[in-house]
Image 1: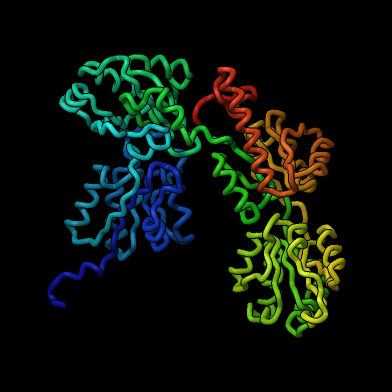
Image 2: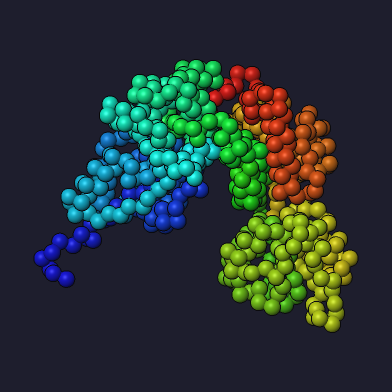
Length: 549
């Protein structure tokens, strides 16, 4: 290396990162990698919550604006001193991620920040993202091109000049216009003045690619009346960004069969799951696949057993060869055993020679994180009954030891113990942890529960009914109540709740599937009757039928 040449790597480096139009699932793998190694995160407020979850806990975020500010006018930059923040952090040797909505290559302000880095010799890279002008129409069911290959023109209404409007207005190209809700009619007027026919179809999509997305179909001449009739204008939120697509591909007849996102059975529903985020992970993923927003509220808290001696003896027996099997029925059981191992200076190697069973995928994942690959996971239903269906009977020829270690909660049912005994096994049923009622959720969540802010609640046991009502109050009567089985439904009814959905099988995934079927039937009934498709929470007094910002 030439000792007189500037060493650009002595300073920090900057990653200009496209965070996409809003759906967290649209982040690229490269974007997630860059976020994980960032020292400083400087993000547009609209995508801060999208990118922050992938950054380290100790990452510095000089711009602490919330994603709730996503409704700021499209032509007002969040902060114009972001370039100074980027440069200052980079000069201090930090790894900086500058996250922007959509794609950085289409953001003129970000281009200025890149030029500033280049002028000072600061190393930077660009991670492209999905542009809103491309991603939002895809989620709205509006393909921008078809086999006929019509041209596509992209217009930013904030910066478009008369020549731009004239060129697009005089053509038959599909026009994708980035503008704000209260400026859509003005943009439509510009195109009509430039030569487009007033009956040209267009779609207007707000909060695209998120579960707040809402799309209206109109024409250039009728868009103002359509938005007024939908009661979205006039509005204090009129400055929020929208994507309007102008052209024949926006016609209702062409769009309706392709509207895959907004037609999901639980689209936009806020569903309350009375479990911890860890316990509800796979269930929440399933709800999201149906278009819902999952909100986890723990109804129980976990504490050590009152008398730990039984657990201590069992763990020692695990090491000395007392057991043939150990069966984990929850993530909490894995956590309890792992903590006891760490207390004794043990690790996953202590499981050598012992068969390990897990009641389901989440418990199995917790074991793998501990360094243990389970030998048995139910092939069917992920429950104690499902585990018993696959559990081998005791065979004195092949099983040198006939004992099973079962670390469980203090309130666990006897299904698994009785089933194992019936299969010929001796069971050490040990209380590994106690379950107690959790602390009440935040006041905002309690108000949403009692005031009808949630569209549905999934009750997975009788205790979740009792505990949720005890710590947060009774759900509003517009909220759809879904229960995992007859016993849970009976408890819900005893607490004055109307049960709308019941799972055909005692499985949380079948319960979510049943709720999705209920939502789909409700949607179909509204469409058949010619009524607008609304969420249950929009039926409560005082609710506003508009996109949530």
